[in-house]
Length: 388
Image 1 (tube, rainbow, N blue to C red):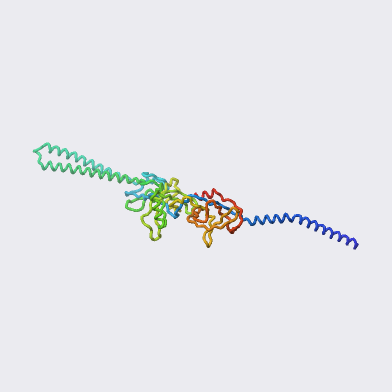
Image 2 (image 1 turned 45 degrees about the vertical axis):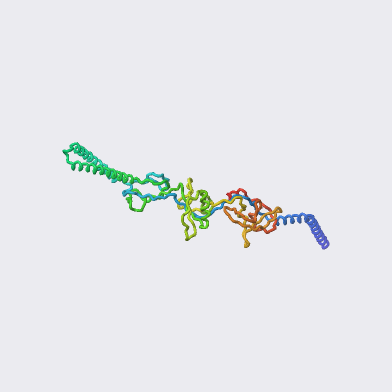
């Protein structure tokens, strides 16, 4: 029994030794491939993936940015010019109205009566004038049988009645005007605001409360400011041709309209050191609305054939601005740069970069001078959209 147990242990130990030897041989045969894979993996780890974009020559617009407020090109508070009760409101709040459209009607009966009375008075005076003319003709035909005093007196009576009829004409014109004022019409074309009176209210010409406010929105104006040190450049450019102004939402994401600079205010605000400017927009699509706050861009000039690089390529350090350029060996080079203008994701580089340089726009945090990189080109369409 003891001998059998010994034989079993010897067989087990032999089997384990054989399996160990076989495994070692198999591992040794695969070790060159493992080493090769490790070497290639190390090479891939050393090459940093980055995104690049080319530096190019382009015409670069120079804008002055600011904040502005939209206001109606003309704004009118419509008030009654006669006293009376409102019989009818003919507009809807927010409605586009045209110049001359009826907005409200005031009870016309007292004014119609005054007009009729003035017309009747004229008819009475015309009858008196006709009779006076007949008397004058009689005195004239009598000759020496009529005294000179009677003839002169009659001529005076005719002149007085003639003047009275002219006064009657003026009274009729005034009464007709007052009657016309009972129909309140829009003095301009624009958008009607909120109604300030209702049917049945008594309105008075002497009060400041109006019926409605009309704001002209085609065209429309934007009032904005610019630093006073830019005033000479604005005036110089404006003397050549009207400057383009772009209105944008305050978050800077959506352009709303393009217009032209119309007015430079005649005085600088000494408290803020700014000058007020007024731009006019056609606003056919009503993208601008009175009272709206917008961001503005005033095109002062355009730099011809400027060296332009994406903003994402420009990095900041304690020594100033710099950018990484990828050379022909796919290695990163650090370049110190100077930037004079920047807008819409693009910058004008005065020195440090040349057109055709491939600059790193993403992945710079892993890059050092001399680092080997693998590159991916940035979306050219997005870059073009930003440049425009």
